[in-house]
Image (spheres, chains in turn blue, orange):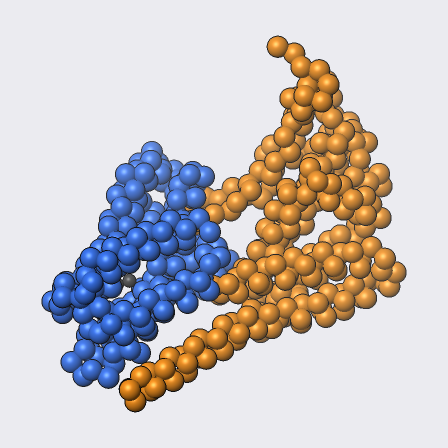
Length: 206
Length: 254
Ligand SMILES: [Fe+2]
Ligand SMILES: [Fe+2]
């Protein structure tokens, strides 16, 4: 904890620009809120569906990964002094309700929800990785003219890459478990996708 | 084109803005801009005015003029420094802001001492006490400064700085909150700080012991605040879950 204080640290890189700082601020805030949401969606689904023995370990595995994602971004939010989303109570309630509702629709409903969410989140993480590669090429090391990623930027990129891959695994899992058989499939997935996009936009800002 | 009247004044008056309004993402691997950039001439002037002349002459233009003379600078070369024409109100605002930033930056001297304290609450109180006592050298003039801070045109800037202070104190004290508690802690701390400062203006006890105990009372109220909020939330979730289970059991009965 409190890395800024207690490791009297020698910085390796020059200052980030205000725009870069603002971007990273948003990245951490929205990803934290998103992983919080994912954590609670699975909590809701697990509550609705854990009485089905075939499904329980599948859900539990994905849920455990989301808990790890969530904890990771919580730590990053504290370490980098990022303000969490003001709307966290709403994200908690909404995500839990979404998980519970889709879970009550049955296995297919829950999986359609996962499919929709992970489609949006996979794209969202890819978009962030693009910006982190293209928009952060100009940061110079201290005492030399070479540019490189600092350890923090590097590890943030790595984290997002790993999480992106795991989200896409969840997407595959959902399709393997008959997400396409959910009814009404189109309405359900499109509504959830839209909800996620609105939530992402909001959580970046508020 | 040359405007006269209020429009003209609005055009030439330098906009009073904090150097860093929003802190944003911080990383130990990247250089951070210091709270006060001492390499800048205007900060050297303000610093000299603040330490040497404000305790005597208050937050006034005169303190700045004395500092300029003291540093053996020529005032006629300084026109551009504090905005056009060294308008009194802006120099005074800058001087007040210097006080706030200087005392906030001072807190980083106390990390070793604070590290020996066991709890987050104890650390918050410790930093609050240090910060309040840093008002002592200028306390005679502080009501004037507060009066200026709450002017509508200045309020936003000074509230930002107040938020920076409570954010620093909570962070230094080891705050780990990830949700709404993050906000409740900071708002509560800002409130406690302002109340303690107002109390301090009328405090006649030696060493300001009354102010410190007033502050300690205020902070023990907020100690439980983040916790209180999350308890309400957990209570709501727990009841939500019970309700869902109730509905499920009713549905299962058919
Ligand atoms: Fe995730
Ligand atoms: Fe996921």
